[in-house]
Length: 293
Image 1: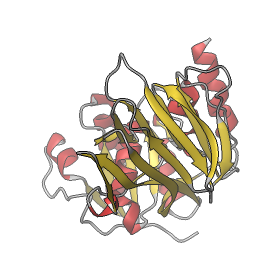
Image 2: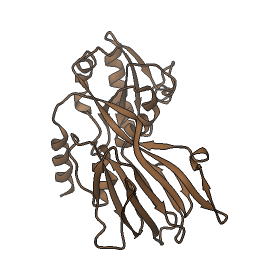
Image 3: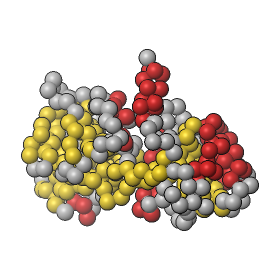
Image 4: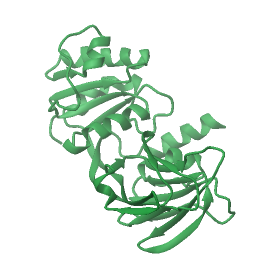
């Protein structure tokens, strides 16, 4: 693979461990033949000048030091430019992380060409219509911004003590309808995140699919469904129930009034992940399962 020379380092700013690891990486790369930049807040934390904004800078790769939440945040910020991400775990499980903190010595070798790029599918949500003041507003995508996510998009009840009524269709064919706390539309990448916690299946990363999982359904037959990644998934928050909120990777909590129709499909953007190992998924999975026993 091509050598990656111009590198940006960013980290979870409220984690002293992540900041210390970032400092070591910066010092190491600065002594080598790399042009190394620091994200603005990280530079401030390290008492260094010349920090840059991650949204504006043009680099060959971004090194992200933190947990899965930090990686998801950065992935959203660089998706349109297709900048690859090399992640270093400074959190707990680190399912999305490629290197552990004690492996940072491998970074120069990786950036010099010993890596592969995995392009991860993102899921996109478009609000097609919604119900307000006794009328249906169509072309709602002109009002609501289109959102996408690397892990999952969740539609959840706006009132924790009350359920919402949902109708779900795949390729214009009814899949199920019923009441519950909400629904998760997950990518393969997100299969080990919120979807798994809600009872969804573990999916091998070689499979490119969407996973549909109801949250606390008031039914014994509503189970997770795996559908092809090119599927069009329509979710309707029925107008005879309560309102909802929609979040993307735990961000952007958008109010969804009852009567809203949402289309979920594959995003035009992908997240590029720098990989250093061919098969590491099952090792991470075993490590997480052992931790939870």
